[in-house]
Figure 1 (tube, helix red, strand yellow):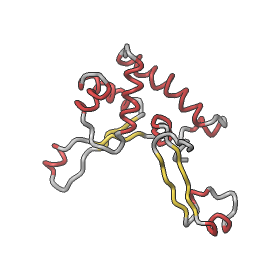
Figure 2 (cartoon, rainbow, N blue to C red):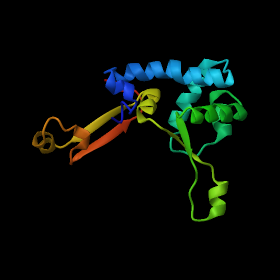
Figure 3 (tube, one colour):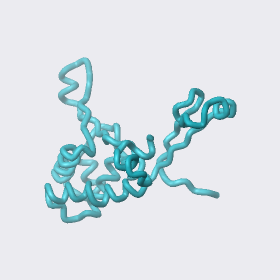
Length: 161
């Protein structure tokens, strides 16, 4: 579930998650942004989307995000706004007991779907269990839901030596 995400079409039509997420990224997400703000350089937007995925759960720094993706901070702000309106991302406001700090601190960037983040970053999910945990439970129970198992998300591609 972490790697595949929770988009219903993946499950109700039995489409492989990697295929559906690739199609979603190249058609739906980019089409929405193109229609709303007339993005001319889709390569820059694709890079921007991946950079956003890499900065998930971090404070949003528009200047850094814009310069890393080769666009201005105003363009980065505009793209983030459209992605937020399209329910691809959401900004989690800062929380602090001091109200002044809540207002001053930058919000954090989060994606609504973990599968999209995993796809954009080329990550894999490993489930590590001890031997007796694997054999003790019914095969219908996914490994990540069994007690004694640890879910590890690895970012990047796996290389074999």
